Image (cartoon, rainbow, N blue to C red):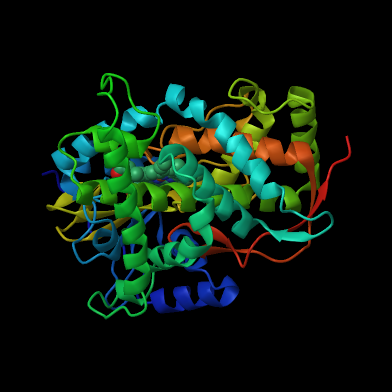
Length: 444
Ligand code: HEM
């Protein structure tokens, strides 16, 4: 092992930094930004029971995500994410991780994803049909409803509408269960109020698996050289996948897949509401490219400005704002010695706002991602991570965002109600308390 130096610690002012950040806008992110500014791009948080190494920037991102990944594992057994997702691809390491990814990746490649565009559109129209003219809608709630319908309807091939109300709370409880909280410093603390909700979610998922097995058993054998259109069918067809393992993957994809899309769509709508000039330009593009035609896999590819808006929203508010790892054996990362067992956080949020790599990083400037603009340097822009653990749903999420947002801009005028929003660190980075926009169907 090459040698490195110890990580700088934010002591003795850490407590003060955190308190200042929390007092300013109740956000740990602000506290971390202050530490990054005052201590540097690599530092250790030294709170009782919580001493992660935080790293910011392309070198550490590359090492954590690619070159040094074999020294890192995903999470501890005691982590709520591991307890909830058990052997889901997100929490597995090594061969098991590679095998599970191998089963699911083919379903999420572009040629498969575009097959789902008509369904993405139909669900968007279904949700927006409930928007009363002139009323205020909370886009955080509306986008969650939509992301759930789309995920279940396309990647699980199940109509989720009839179960939405019953499972809404269990899903939110599952998300709360894995969101940062006191458990980080008190890993053995009992967690009450989750069991019934998680059991209800499990009962639903196991029933779906049994139904799909029964349905496929009655059909002629499939051509397994071609991927299925949905993940559930794909997994049920794989002989080595037990019901337990399939439940773990579907729950993983459900949580990782819809909560992130919810956050992205809500952030874009918030930013458009705050920047009427950007909204007007995005809408003009939608009118020029789509006119009155429905969004399709082909025409949404031409929504270049909207794509830049989406990318810039992902830069400012990356739904997954940190890559979490545990150091498996003593390692040197970005020149710093890290002992086995250290919790390591690659801060995507702080990398995306680092003045060394971005001009005026706090400003919302979609033109950074214009087709003719210089591309960000490698590993300075990592909203979907990188390396072998790069987001498996990145293509799906980006196609979905263009279809949903293109359709909404085509059909609605949206105006901000001026309610203040802050970035809340839940399982994803969410606009809280919500994104309240006035909606008006456009006259064409
Ligand atoms: C805007 C939407 C999304 C964002 C910003 C996002 C972001 C990310 C990031 C940053 C990672 C890597 C985390 C790390 O290295 O620790 C990741 C992994 C993952 N994402 Fe996404 N994601 C999104 C949508 C989706 C969707 C739609 C799905 C499923 C359909 C999905 C499923 C996953 C899974 C299963 C992993 C773990 C992959 C592995 O460990 O091999 N994500 N995502």
